[in-house]
Length: 141
Image (cartoon, rainbow, N blue to C red; front, side, top):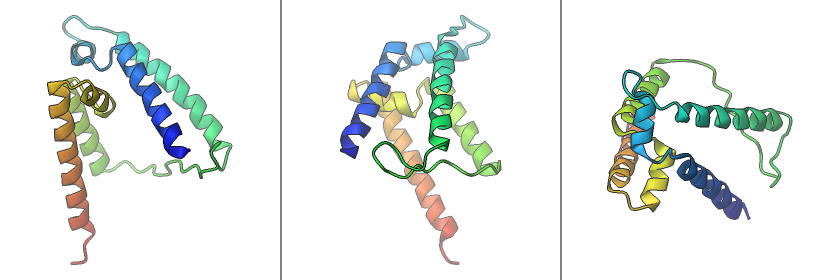
């Protein structure tokens, strides 16, 4: 049952990305091009997503379990450190260069997009490097 709801949520998210045009790297790069032909549509999509997320988090904070009776595990970290800043900067540079972020990369993988597939493979490699570095960081010395 949980897998079915996870699939449904991912499907709705992916369709939303397709409809809004956020899987089109040129559209995303148009939003990031403040000095050129700026396209504000991504800001509207983000504003809508933030509105939905705020409502969802407000509801989640009042509950202990999901509707499927799974525990709600909200993030508790509030510390801003070098790793957070560095990861955010790396994400932003990758997004700005490719016009793709992780959600649209998965959708583009399903559309057999060459650029999307290359981004997805690079994203997996980056996750692997992170896991490897975390393993080294937390291994006994």
